[in-house]
Length: 513
Ligand code: 6LW
Image 1 (cartoon, rainbow, N blue to C red):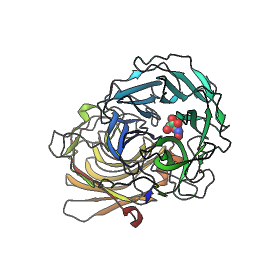
Image 2: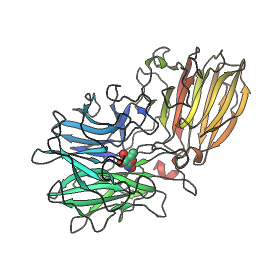
Image 3: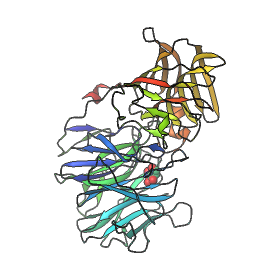
Image 4: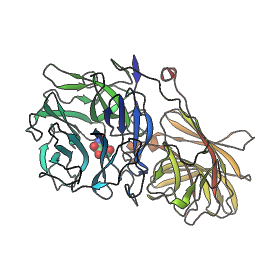
């Protein structure tokens, strides 16, 4: 049987995976978004369902004023003695920490803050009871670039040995994202090099001792799409996993750029690839380091994917796991109970143009071709009061279709913000307080629409996907669709009520199968 990559589409980078019996669990990075570190469950490693987040409280995830693409970097997920451990870095406060839980769904513990510098911390539970923390050294020049390691006591969070440099990789830039494994009674140290962009690769070394000296695999890299003719690029940051049936697999990140020069706007996504061991016990990921959008599932027994939920009616008292806030949301800014069946947003003075926490509830764009829409009820009566639907990459790169009070009039606007340039490319007076906003996406453009509940759909304009791409906008994240409200510099007195949010992927015949 074949399966399709990415196995988790949209902005889901730096995957880390573990297995408990026949259940697989996976986490990804979340940067400035809240809650943090989405966690997924699967029975086959191909079909993943999000079951929650590891970091759901501000005490675990302080993100005040976190710059875009700061906050939470690469997490590692492990299960040991009936307990899950998720270890990661909050780059904004320069702290490494772990949280634990008996159930992957949570609740997860308060953080154990570590005396450990750098990023990308990983844990390895050795057979003799020792636990190793392995991580990427500081990038600020205070340490030699490479991978550092120590023993750690996970009851107290204290280190029980000095921090030691263990490997610098094969000479690529940014040796990072390490995981230490004990396989075939040998210690394998797998890392990424080349940076998370088009030079990305995975390399591996091994030793009889957890501290090395590590012997580099003569066939490194074991995964890389550098200079490849492929729809997938920048593959790297991998984690190894042995399936219940004994077969070996890796999850890794990759991107699917559009056009030339390449531009990718959906972010770094999660891919699955088979791992083969050579006779002399070195692994390779995929076909000689190459992965594909369609791959053979080998001995995995594939189950059914979850039905895509096209409509969120906001009828529950909790937001679905797919929704996120920007940084730590203010409790006054949003409610699912204030008006039953509607998401209410109270716009604050903060706008989408600030690296702050505007009244915003968003979800990742996970398909190149898709359409989203929402019904908004909003009666702005003061200049600057605004609510609508945004395609958001970061505070400097976003598009929105909105209802806004401007110079005494209520207008529908299409605004495009690209770096220091911005333009309202459509402005049309609109007298009603109810409006349906829509965005129709294909791989290269977004089309913005509006309609009354009974009337025909009008096109407000189009905008390029490539101008929101990482290659233009920078950062480590991917595009979100967001519902938002703002008073543009002062509190918005009118509440913005959103009745529903539809996300309808346009799948090609292959993807449906
Ligand atoms: C992460 C690093 C990386 O910490 O990108 O692709 C950084 N690899 O290991 C942010 O995701």
